[in-house]
Image (cartoon, rainbow, N blue to C red; front, side, top):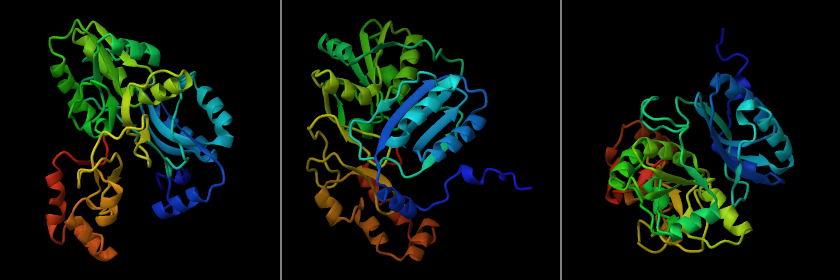
Length: 350
């Protein structure tokens, strides 16, 4: 008997081209949002299947991770289904009154399909379960409290990966150069060594990384640990609605089709190919490379959205030749062409 019998409709089977065409043909708006919660989910697989059926029925799109320790979601919801989505979500005891963070820039094209995965962790930290108490977190600050703490000289730490902070960050922040969250925790601990008695401010995209980091730092003896409530996403909303000063410079990197939303009008990063001001992340058009890098409009046109001459040559090959390259049956030099961009990375990680 087919082990997947009865679950045929619990995954997406459309191509990217079909998904893009369907999304562009929509005549309604979508609300892009994110949310997370550390909460015990006894049967994550059953929860996953239930959510997939409910959200498919509502035509929701997004990327959601579930684990025994909780949920981490980035998704969009058709505006006309918003109230039903919120009601059904918060009717579940695990997600009752869960804070929902709405995107500040939203064209409704943030996701192409609905993907819900069960993982060991909703945020991989590389630590043992009993290495610290994840519930013993720092104090949550709203935007006004955050601004005041910054003005008083508190230490500000960006808990995102370096390709995220490159295009935007709070002024005078400590900016770790890690590629993953599990690499970032020890790097931040080292950078803050000897500052256990100082006021620490942590921030990230939506708050989930700061939740674990604040508990991690408290476990290591830091006495005054604070985190930005709702992350950069909610900070942007608060400064707009409350007319507060904006201390964030540049763009907030987001993990969806947009790859970024502007928090200020400043462009603080540069094109990785020509060095001109640019804050537009792209993935190399050579799917075998898929390198994530910053590319200005002129270079995108000149290099056909590729990161290198070698990759540009690859995209002109036939589909069959490109498949052979991906199987390693032709010149492997294509994979090494981007190494001159030393600090660039493909496929964003937590």
